[in-house]
Each structure stands twice: as structure tokens, then as C-alpha cells.
Amino acid sequence: MTARIIECPRCMIDGWPRGSCDCKRRFVKGTGVIIDWCPRCEGIWFDGGELERSFASADRQIEIPHEALAGAFRCPLGHGPLRSFHYPDTLALIEMCEHCFGIWLDGGQFREIRIVRKHRAAEAEKKQREGVRGAICDWIDAKIAELSED
Image 1 (tube, helix red, strand yellow):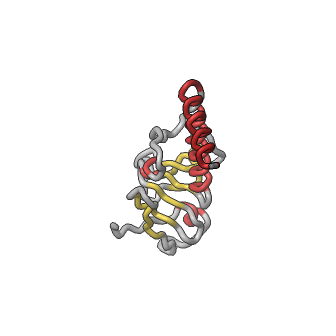
Image 2 (spheres, rainbow, N blue to C red):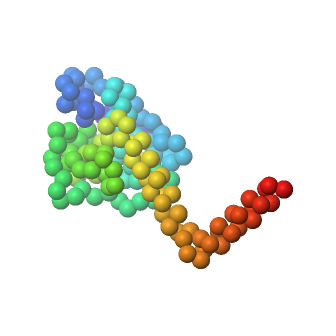
Image 3 (cartoon, rainbow, N blue to C red):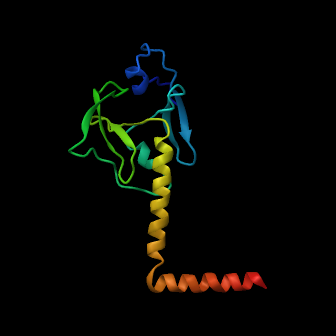
């Protein structure tokens, strides 16, 4: 793991003195992605592309929508203000750097996004099972259940 210290965007606007943030480098289990995590506010910084790689199923690259606003947070890598917008299909208001494409999530937002993505994947699987293939899968499941009862 590289020894890199970032300044937490949340702590910077909350008035903590520069250099007082104790951000830690952490692995996201099963992904090989290393994130920067602030123990004070529990926010997470993902370098460009890391958020998408932190999920089991692939998703399209997140892009900053045209209507995204410049927020109060600044890029911890020194690129200027972050742009604020809602992560697709969630209420999570995330911040993204238009230069390095890093993403800041406040505490709890990563969990919210992960739950929504898991639900979306389950819905997609359910839709895939519809039709003839779904009927065959349901029949096989029923036969397995019958065998289990004996």
C-alpha cells in the first residue's frame, strides 16, 4: 500500500485544521481496491474508477451530469471543487472531481449504494428468469424441492 495522506473533504469544510485529519488506507474486501477512509467522519474517497470496481457486478462508469453543481467540498488531491449529484437510482448525494474523477462519499453512503445495487441485481435476475427460461428454472426448483421433502 502506498503511503499517501489525503485531507478529508468533510473535515476541511467542518473547520478542522489542515493536517489534523487521520485518513487511513483500506482495502475493499474481494476487490483489490484501496480507498481512503476518514475515521472522524467515516467518509470515503475513491480514486477515479475505484467505486465501480468496488462492487461485485460491473456497472457503467459514473459520469458527472450536466446539472451537477459545484459543492462546498474540494478534491483532496488538490484539483479544486467537487461537483455534487445523486448516485444513479439512490438518494445518495455524492461529490466527484471533474479532473481526476475521484468520488467522495459521506459516511453511510457506500452502504446505501451497495444495498441499492444488490437490489437492482436481484431485480434483473428476476426479470431474466421470466418467460420460457424462467418457467424451466421454476420447474427445476420445484422438482428439487420435491426431492428434498422425501
